[in-house]
Length: 198
Image (cartoon, rainbow, N blue to C red):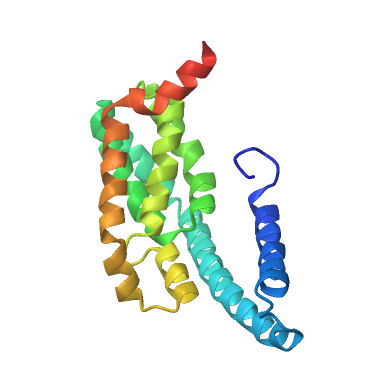
């Protein structure tokens, strides 16, 4: 439904809730009114944990902006090299570290105006660079020991952070391999846009 543009991700969450209620009440007939207080309590608990993590990450992001650290990092990157591949390597390391500490949306808003002009100046396609940024920040968000998404996942699954991190290592390796391919082979990220533009 999201892929077809019928609903937004937020609306899809509401649809999923309604579907769950339908399954619990009509199909399985296990969901009772007496379960509602416990469901609300668990929902509030999970939401509070997630919002606390996002607030802490956003606050740290504002601090970095106040200290102008992303701007300084971007200026240092331009001074270091004019090679686009070396630039992408530095950017990947920077985004990975930033993604561990700052929530992804805040990091995109913060870093895109700084890094995108630098990438375009070095001949990197904006579409390729955008995909690399999003994937890299997502990778940073699930990378131990700091990744905010890892803590969120642990709290939702009620598993220890160490267990979550250990089980996610093969997936992190796969994401890192995809990120490397996207950096080295631009046609992978540009094939579909080029096809649509014909």
